[in-house]
Structure formats: structure tokens, C-alpha cells
Length: 61
Image (cartoon, rainbow, N blue to C red):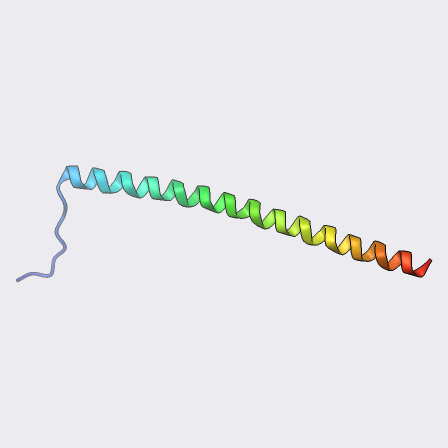
């Protein structure tokens, strides 16, 4: 018995390669969506900080 990996036939290789390419594109798309969510959260945090600063300034007046 040999432990050599079996090379799949050309049809199976083509199907697997296509599936891998599709998965890569989906992961890339998900990464971009995640970046959008992070950017939105960062914007919200900046706005909250600005509001706190403005409230603090108003209290000083």
C-alpha cells in the first residue's frame, strides 16, 4: 500500500479549481464588506467623540 496522493482526473481538477476560484472571490468580497462595516463603526466612534467634546465645551461656557 502506498501513501502517495492520488491525482484526480482532469474533469475533477477543473471542477475543484473552479470551486476554489469562486471561494476566493467570495472571500475577497466578504473582506471588502467587512472593511465597509469597520469604516462605518470608526465614523460612528469619531462622531461620538466629537459630540462629547462639544458637550464638554458647552459646560465650560
